[in-house]
Length: 344
Ligand code: AMP
Ligand code: TRP
Image (cartoon, rainbow, N blue to C red; front, side, top):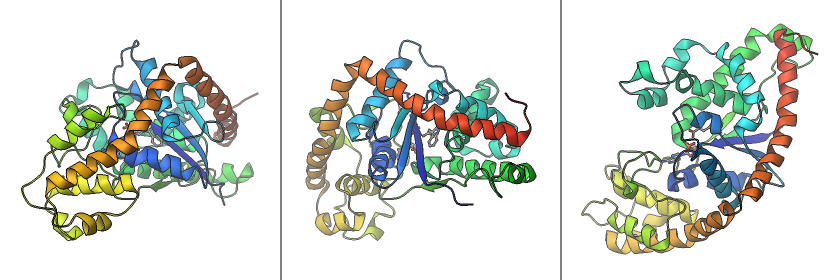
């Protein structure tokens, strides 16, 4: 069965949005608007899998929304909303909790990393997180999902859940006129030179919202001086830059900075090395500062302007939620019919 092409992705409202979120995800969101219908979601129900301060959470939800708009997402042409305003996400997640297997979730590396040694004490929600993510995507029967490299395993799980649902209920799916599959197999879109942006302090660690050192990341709201300082202090090695990509293989910090430069300039690492091969880091870093400030400066400014008007942001989210709910509610009625739940 052919499914209508539709893009869905989500970003959690936890902590500061950084260059990794921007290059790994949001830049792609903006690009995909040209060719697809898109739904972009602030996944607040995912955020509360770890405790969030009720004073801070609404600010974080509005800030991610502001970032989407400031980066160039058009909330009129496409849909921008926060997850908790469309109850069908949580409803379908329950169904998926009954489709997914314990063994599948036990293999999730993000859960293992986040739970660490404290497995007995983390929330049930943190464990079930990927079934909610599958519901986010599949409640719209979305076909394409732009994400950073770290979400690849969760996307594979979403595909497994879609497939198992289609198999478990195949007779009922056919009987209700949906052919041989009710859910599509959502395809991850993980491409380009910055699918995994690393910490500026340690090339073996992912750039993350939760790193204790603010010098490990560039936040979308950092001003020009802060960006410059963070890049100048970024860890490097003593060698000049290589002329070819092969020369980056054993140099994670150099590889990371070259990847960032390439992604910001919308080109390839090979191209960047053609320009900077043989150059010292001091030279390369000043060009990287100029490029970063030119690209990120206006975004940070626009975000600040937007968050100063929470009524506007809330109106965007309310409108997006209404449009999202219409699609999600329809899917949920069909899911109920397929499963055999009595409804009005
Ligand atoms: P999160 O903040 O965990 O909700 O992530 C939002 C999006 O940003 C997801 O698509 C992630 O895969 C992506 N992302 C987060 N951190 C990075 C990173 N360091 N490099 C590339 N993409 C990232
Ligand atoms: N788990 C994703 C992250 O941490 C966020 C997310 C939630 C998401 N639901 C999604 C991403 C659906 C893509 C599609 O980055």
